[in-house]
Length: 393
Image 1 (cartoon, rainbow, N blue to C red):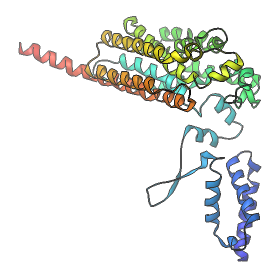
Image 2 (image 1 turned 120 degrees about the vertical axis):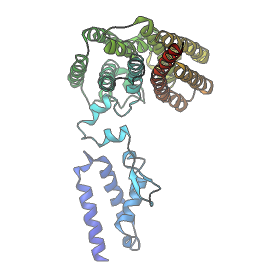
Image 3 (image 1 turned 60 degrees about the horizontal axis):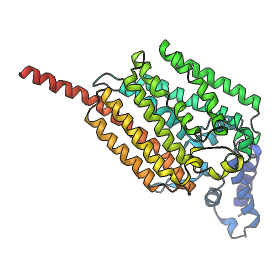
Image 4 (image 1 turned 180 degrees about the vertical axis):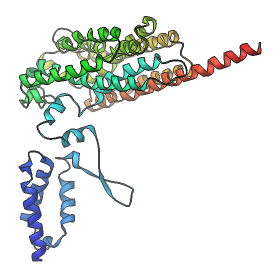
């Protein structure tokens, strides 16, 4: 019994000393749990193995430390750590974490929604029968990550006073004081410099077109102070890649394809960000900011239905002008069904349902991308069939 108690006490002391919870808050909470259990247990409990104690504490601390929560697997009962963007951010060194959260790296849905219109455009611009340019997809993915981070930094710098008054945003790094404005400004400069490096990898036409979007990136966060349509301005900003992706491949924009695609992206943003805005409508009223959620109120579903019709019309027009094929239009039908289901089942008064519908748009965007790729690959088959028919004649 004595060796067991000594081993247990040693384990507690080691855990208690690990950075005193600064760099590893989950381990610190674990050590506190162990200490708490050690003080209250009886002589019989002291005979339990350390692994049993560790298991109990990990599960009891899972609400505080979800990034270290264990899950059962079907592989001989072994447990593994769950992996997510939030887990990765929480595992980073503590001085770095506020900057990663400022970029919203723990919430990658925004990066996806910025990136997906780029992928549509790049895929549409691919040669018939070819896959989209992998290098460009990678380059635009990097740019989307950096520009989304820069946009969030600008937004939080503008909204610091507003964020303090809203429970959901009060813990953001600038609002909570973890990062000062000067630090945020320096960090913003670094992000924009890296994003400029990505932009300079493109042709001159695309460099000029990409630089033109910076005014939208800077001014968008201010729109909620002056208009009930900040989601429209967000749409203009977030879907710039629908223009840029095509020009990066072709050297310039084919406006008969790019403009309908861009228009559809703007309509899509109005749909998903109006749904998102319904989560915060009560807080928005308190702090005095505007949104389409407050503008539409109980008429939200008819408005969203109208945006859906406009979005699908633009996608059909872009497809016709890009000479898309059957797989593309088949996927458009699935996209229309997805949006119809979103709107029909939406409960604008339940924030959790609004969030669920909002994040489902990543899958919608990926579905459309796959439809464009499949339609483009089908072009080669169609052209081959036409050539064979001509030879037979």
